[in-house]
Image (cartoon, rainbow, N blue to C red; front, side, top):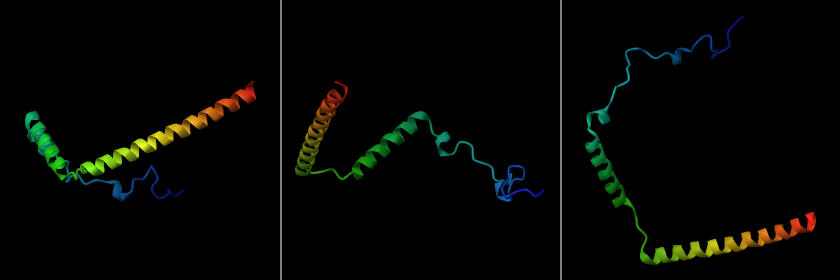
Length: 94
């Protein structure tokens, strides 16, 4: 009987990894101490925060107003649906 392509019994040639390629142990992180890594982490945080485009006060005010308005509408919608389902359940189940 012939084996199917990619069967478990016969591994493909692509699955075999040559032993000459060994994975590196450690890398750059293993060479640094914990305090040096922490300092690098904080430097990276500061660098990323400098890239952020912060909204202006007018944009922030308008975005906040839109969010509050949307949340108020959603609260009203859920309240109306809940009220309707409550009355429907009382009507059906007595």
